[in-house]
Length: 191
Image (cartoon, rainbow, N blue to C red):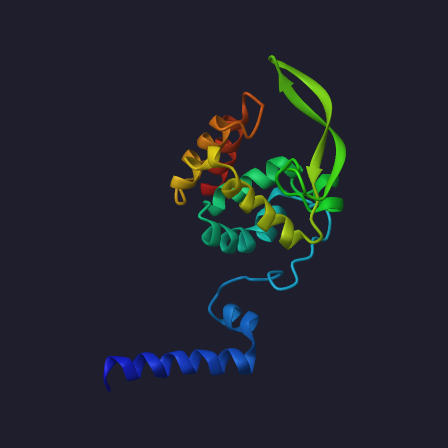
């Protein structure tokens, strides 16, 4: 058989397999956990850090690959920003990253803590609102593409440490310990 015929046969075999057993079952047979990707409904705050990692990792991999963001950075940053999935910003408004609203975005005003002149203060700001968790994570990823100040971070799609350093430099977070916190969380992913 020639190469093109083999490729065509394999492609048709995959299509038929997907039609017969379904995409989720095919991934399961292949050892890939895609639980929740099609419906992706959040069931409330995770009970452990490992629950959060197990829940968010499959979608973080898909969104990270599509948007050129290291999936590990998505996992730890959304964990920190949502208090491991327990924040009302995630549970009520599907906002994974504490993403503030831009002009024209659906938004809700909420109190938040920010470091201003070295002091932590409480302010009220408008945060982006999405209809579904899936739209929220896509909105999170799009945020980094929306503003040119994040272009340096997007040069590191395979380096979560550099990605995090660059978004901090670009002004994503006001916490002076933001990088250290997230780098520590990344280190725990490796363990």
